[in-house]
Length: 419
Image (cartoon, rainbow, N blue to C red; front, side, top):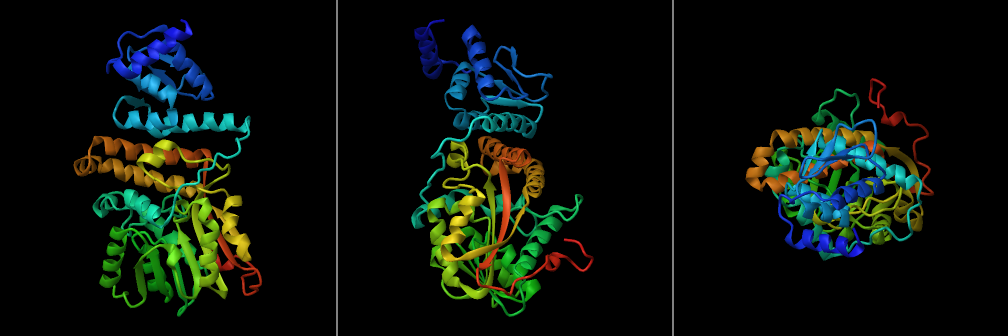
């Protein structure tokens, strides 16, 4: 087939292709095979609308995708990082053998290809996370209804990586263990003042005030989350110890013994890291401790355009090197770094299982397309953490001249001697 014929076929597919896709052409099978090879020959099978299967890796894979029409095939080839998510969400691409397994196979092949070709410079996105832009981005993801999140998060509504002290721990136990681990890393003492940047539905502030006798000011720009957190504090009689502030982290004022941010750095944007460091510098006492808990990655690459469009606009997981832009300019020393990558994969497995148990109720709240999109987001995240494309770092830091820091990690152990 000539180049002109290929262009004509593409034009027909994008403008006049039917949902059934019509008769499969040789160019369709050839294009699909080239596409899979370009992805690194992932261990998946790909079926076209006539039932024909294309496989470029052996042994025969268990997971696969079904492409339901020619237009979808051409859209996938033209922009896979956007259109796979779009067309899976609308049902034009089906998955067989498990979505997590499928995504893991794809990501492993892509990761293998990256090892043999260093990333090009300038891949990192500089998303607009201004005061107004950040509010819009947070509203898109977090202000879509507390009732929705309540269906699949734990009882405390913690929407960040849990910490599993043993493999059989429940999600509730693991989230409580994560919050306690954060408190121990900060060495919280009764009477201390803590500031929290990005508080979600308020669980960590409640845990700190309830179990460690500190006072907390928590900042968040999600109206629904702040309202929920204030109700929780009032119900528990802790409103005098916790202040939930509906405002941007850039407006934090006052001096505190501890600074903590769990799951917010992903929404800050690399071009605002120094600004965040400046906020911490003016907020933290001379002997204060800080902790930042964030999704991260080893190679500076933007998230997929589909995830940025549909799920997390304005988000970016930094590398450890990029995170140092928060600390280095202001003379902070990193005391401890822990990677909880596999804990996040396990957390997401719990979330996805609960999500699937409630998929009919979620479809009633939104629609089937929303269900498929969020299933893809959760399954893709599990795969990314399993493969190691994504990391989860907890970084503890202090001012460089602060010598009142622990010499060992014994403060992280509970009375039984376990972390």
